Length: 155
Image 1 (tube, rainbow, N blue to C red):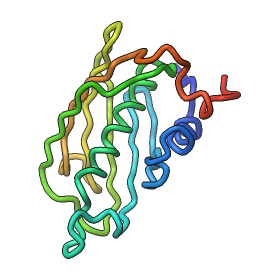
Image 2: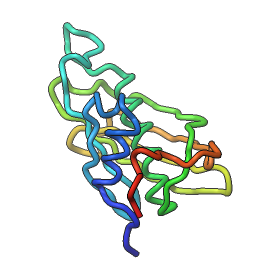
Image 3: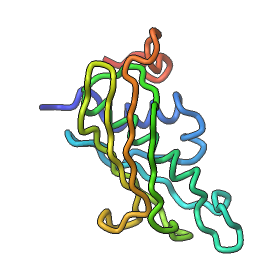
Image 4: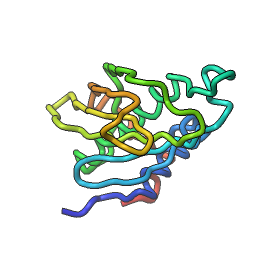
């Protein structure tokens, strides 16, 4: 089954509809029927501790939250307003200073009103994660159309 949207459309949503993610440099690396992979390039300004350069946990949270939300669109094959209800993140080890961080997120179940996600953040090996996450998202969280500016002209 083909995807009703592509990486360019998802990247456009991030760049125009989620300005803080655009400012951070979050990029869509991969999309498939199972989920999405996003990346966050290392920048010294994001170090939680300027002495050792370890990435601030808030940026890892933002990367995971964004990828987890977007993987719901992949699962449902449509855009709709969503809101994060709960996001649990277990930080397993510090992110390595100077290295790009990736997040793989999948939506493994949906109900009429709720979507459930899993995500991991890692550098090069998904089997050696920096963080593990589970999330719950409200579907149709608003009566307004989602991402009007980002999705104008899209079919």
